[in-house]
Length: 547
Image (cartoon, rainbow, N blue to C red; front, side, top):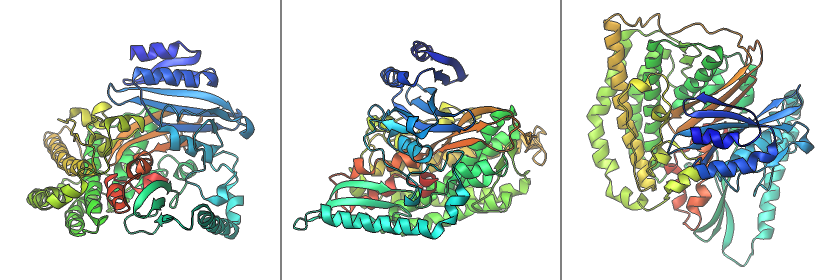
């Protein structure tokens, strides 16, 4: 960390400070130093730019842009800030995409939502938002949502007209005598979910793929600013219903940091236990989806059967199987009736009795291995360059897991080790899902045992220790938190104003955004039949992709 700090201090900064154990926080006095500093950071080993997060300070006439640089190997990270003039025609800064490929879509998002222009970006098009938002910036504080929504029918017509125009242009641009064509894979393809891939192909060969995302864009980062700090949970957990708990944990950690509140040991262990149950639930969907995407539905049904037992436990605890709203600032929402662990034990027993069959029939399936073993290969360098995380990164041999790298809740008290594959293929990502489930099962067993023992010895009260009080009004401040979500790194950047009753700004960086960027990289030169296989192996959730 000393070397990193020394590099930053060579530039004119408003401040440079140690933020957390593996984070330095700094603010450049001049945006003109950004590119030079970014070059120095990359040479130092910070090869991943996790996300770009603007904050619109309307009254100060400033657009503050936050950059989060990461070194996945040595676990050194930098939170860097610059100020830009808020006026749209002056809100410009050099793009970092030529240096950090992972910045490509994040800069496009900042451009689309806030009007920040990134100079020399190779492809600065709008992303996420639909045609009716072209030329306006919905996350700026002075954007009039009410006026926009009054023109609903006109907005819909704009979207329809834009699609028709695109189809007409495709017909004109492509040689009618060639075998080249533009295919729309989705947004209603059974393997894609609500995403459209513009596939430029020559017969069966893929020339390029341009993902068109945003079909379920809900402006979650805006919605949370309309809720109080507890009410915001209902938006945060909809980052993706398949692992809603860990996204809530990340958000609550940021709130608790600004509020200067420490949760109880019982709540910390419950966050681990509930989070791992959610991870298992999500991974079962991922395993089943991997086979479903190539038309083999049996494993999907087997996984759904086992997954139901884990959802039974979530329902017994929270009253809901999916949208549990079970984590909130200050701890976990509900106390624990110890008899609920009977449902959890049923789930663990179900897994233990079926895991051998699943492994023998599906995981070791020679046909699947032959089909996926040398397909969709991501190198370690790809992981760093494109800011990949979770099972996608670990399948390429990169040791990254925020539960280990930057422990939260009670993860620092667990026996937890990195699990990796080395090949980086679609099959390696499938294997990582299965191995991750097995690891999560062991974590659940450890957490369950710890809670039962502490309760039996009187060290924890499961009906009273679940929550500590968090003020309804928070001071002016900001915080970042990271969690190891089912699909990888989720980073929350929370900003509050003085005596705040709700978030002023919440950036939710989620992994599917980066992983979807890899589709063209992986599929260029492949055949159309590889699209569902590789798409499924990237473990993409439309919820966190579109937010």
